[in-house]
Length: 579
Image (cartoon, rainbow, N blue to C red; front, side, top):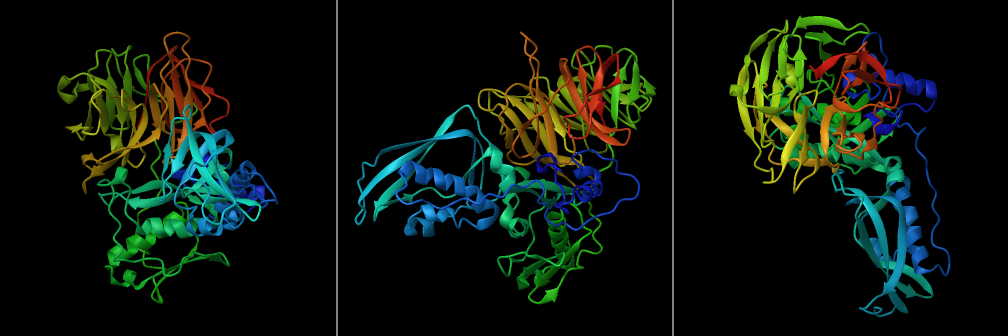
């Protein structure tokens, strides 16, 4: 199964066994939207290698020219991340540069073919060198990773130049000065970096939140445990609990897998924690190393004491409740939960609705005039929401709550159990507005489409909740997950994958769409041959599906790899919503 479509267990190499492993995944992390009911079998998180291509780069040849040396270094870096620990890559460096350079501090991701060009080194050759020059590499950069494996997209239309200083000694050119980190092509990215969800505990203590990182394949387990023990990223600060570790670190710089058992050796700090904090820490390690699965052999020790069963009573799970898709069709609320659409309520008078959100206990409709009308479970109106102020978009949240964007795009509103509150966005620049929003399945993350002078694209930010799951605010600052412009609709396909599309332009109605493990590299999402006006995702006929509504009032859905055939789910639709 492709790593790019979700958090997938790295399982046995044979194709049949790999499919069985896919079927064992929970609904929240199943990128293919497979059925989640019935008997399943789980496998240990053994590393799957059927989709990975290993490279065996060669070291520098005698008398290689400067451009060839730098190109050889670029060819060797992917293997360094993936498997050989930069053994070959360091052969292109001088001994001094090799000792100073750390390839694991960051990564630059590029598309296309690098351009290698030499220029003079105005500083001259250092003592002991026969000569010196600089090779500049021009790249089309599309993203970067920081030292914690957090991905940030960049505008690929702009090029960047990276400079490498080379010296010649004993007739051979070597790189003597370079920045830390690696430079990896987008084609190699998912071959050498592994998507890992570092599971955080929500501030409410009631949900788990996948904090997506991209870690090097050769030692991803070691890095993953270190990230569990480290602080939470800024964009989730306040929405999830900070790591309580008591100064616990890895006792050895390795988390080996041997005889189907993963062994994590920690320092004695784990023994000083309370039983509750220790249980949560072990559980987070278990879920993170198991891609959300707990059914595998894990041994956790601290100063010689075995804490492997410390989380035996922890009930926090990565499984998410099934989510239904509804349409507002000819004055009726229609459920698309099965292959036969089912009317569940009467909703007269909203033939020109701009937005719609519904669940088993009721919902809301965004009228053409921007007013949000409350709906009972039978579709009858139950009054205006948000003091009758106009809104520009609505979305469903945790347990049936309703989120809305102010008409001016400058504030958010949320209604839960008929209690409404306004959320200000102090980080939003003066010329920026929110054009669309979506709430993650566990309710702890918001995806926001932003358009303006300072920001354009898709942001994600954490949602802070109290012990009753009431929204108390947002994290201090968002993280950018896409730099796509003119995004007009978006939805979480599942807990890891975000799907979004541009609004149709005024000339040829052209649209573009993408999907991605967020934050992570984006991939093109194919849309139906129609003008899409909204999208949602949920369970249809036991499968997780992406649904879109076109301007002719037809709902189509797709499942599986998200590149399959679109099928009509409903027709004559006014609005599309999700629980």
